[in-house]
Image 1 (cartoon, helix red, strand yellow):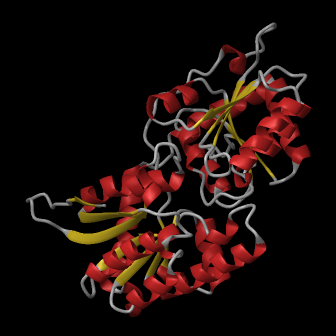
Image 2 (cartoon, one colour; image 1 turned 90 degrees about the horizontal axis):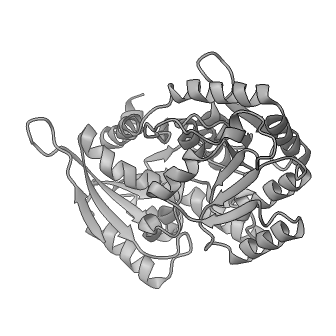
Image 3 (cartoon, rainbow, N blue to C red; image 1 turned 60 degrees about the horizontal axis):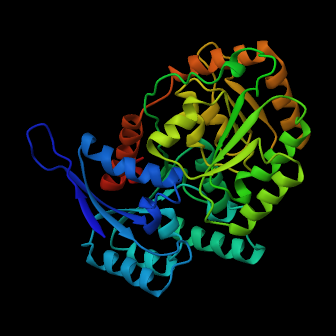
Length: 386
């Protein structure tokens, strides 16, 4: 599927053009992801900074494409004239290096990496090694690599031996949002009430660590709280089934709710009712849900992995809007949750810091400008003159 987003200068003249190749699931409401949101927002925002976007959505199970998906990608690359600018989502580009690498010789190619492929939790070691090798081949052939965090940029440079001048960062932005009122229990201890409302927004997969969160919640089951797990459940049905069993095993069926994927007003309502966002991820390139929560003044308890510390950040006065704990450290996660639930002072401190952090968050227009800078580098081969 192809579509054009037309960027025009103030006088109405068409501007620079980029062909943007995205995976087929980018518009699937049943499988929302940060990468999909990012891709779609850049299609909308790049025209405002002077770029005409030729959109190509390539259906298929990326990064493991079938014959028809490969044929469509080959067609898109073949129809791109020599020396034209092409931006490819990393799921697609790194899933077919045998097609992308040869094309990089005649195209000005940029690859947008949302998550290093080998970092997905639960992969068979042989499969992870295969994806990692494919990613290395592809990224070494690209003129520019765009990542969504400083952590990801550093990891790709070191892991794949890339020229750091070719790796650019364009962190996700966030839309301004009203402050979340939360619940009365999240602001003060209310005897006899169900307690503060915890929220986890993430696809239900092993990498997101919902099983670790459920285990931690079981350790604080004597305290008042409820927790909603919002996210797609179609990527790993076996994991979802095990998670439901774990919730039942700990007697948390009435307190931990798997809500499925949500977007639009339904997701807005989940944020509005939340007192604390919790992420137990094993890896995150950035963590857009963190800034979405902070944009509403909702504090965060998350694992200190990948780009999550960048996303959590600090308030202008230096306070952290919540807490970071080591990945896989159940005791640390339990301690952080217990401290937040039982200490009114910590709830007040983290909420005040989140509201301050909210004022320093960058919008999507900043992301578009940063991505446009990377595309200008692609356009003019700027690294060759440095």
